[in-house]
Image (cartoon, rainbow, N blue to C red; front, top):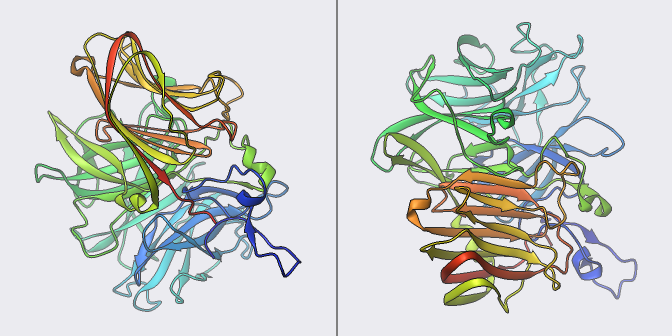
Length: 499
């Protein structure tokens, strides 16, 4: 069945109806959500037999019990998902519950479980004091169920508190498997010929971005034809005024160690709620180095349980899947993001406005709670310009997206609508903005509990949770300190996928 929450009636004269048709719902219209209970970290999807196989950390005992397991979903388009149930259950071995890791298709049968067996290497807290160690699970039924290889770890804890989230790739340079491991503030690199026996190669030290998690390593070709390796991590840069999302470095991986182009990382998202991100290859026949896909958990460990969806029995939403490309920009290579094209198939109606001149504010006649809005904004002199979305009829509640020229930054501000941070610290996410351009291109994805903003072809992205009242669906354009021109305003209203 497609992921969603369905109410079954005992009266045979009544057909099954979705929750949305019975009562107001905060379940996302087109974002992936857990069918029930809890989800957090995504695991990198793989492509097998015409489908993407996606595993994620799931807790069927939430909120009254702990421990995660790997739940499975499949998709042919990365938009519509089918629930496949739990693939790696918790507490079935002496080593506790399965945490994050990664799964690969063993096309060459290097591990000996059979050609195209699925091999997952997963962090579990061992029976000996809860040490984080790495265990191997394998599947011979195309990922429906996994079997534990053995009770002993394939990589024991080397004596560090944080030792988790192994990410595996096949490196054609050395014709071996390579693993990136989160080890506190270090990323460790390991190699193996058979996925069972691993040798340590080197470590990459990070600085001032907290404990790193969910490492990522892959090769991409930039728009100038140059190949670059990307090393990514989920990291916390709040102490340095940076995001708490996905940090990455471009550079070179020589099969043993990673050599960055610059010591400071760049960030793939400037919002508050894009964590535990994974990137993955296009599944179908294509040049896998030209682009990748990415998705993340839309939540934050500072407020993980604050959501109105708990009233409906679940807590867990992912970002949309985005396409990432590598762009040469001056002396820097940077990742840029765009919503995947497949989202356009959800469009059921479109509103288009060629040009609107705004000095003050103008409220559109268009409303909605599940759509993509795209526009170009230009100005000569301005203090503040943007849009107020999910706005209440009295104009008091809204989430703001814009450019604050006086401060030299772009922003998403959720202070005036429902949102998860009760401390009030994380209400406006910001990113640097080059004011000399005097224009900005915006592509904004709005859903029941989220907003994702792609600025200037995805050079800057913000992903934030928001909890507007369900009837707050207004759209207002605004400018302060001058006149702004909004051109080519196109609003695509999306059908629901969570039925």
